[in-house]
Length: 62
Image (cartoon, rainbow, N blue to C red; front, side, top):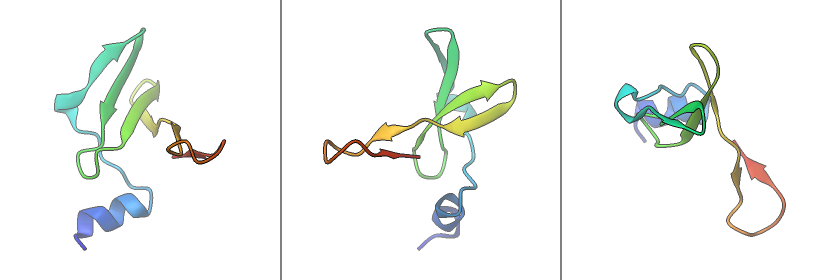
């Protein structure tokens, strides 16, 4: 397991600035290590977007 993947598992995602784009008035991008979808919640504050659990229930994963 790479050290970077361990950081993402602990919640320390890093934004890949090359993937940032504007969608419906908000900035979205991807984590440079694991590829998780991220959204800018406040200026210069990024959080993970909730993603449905592959149709297995009503759960959301961050």
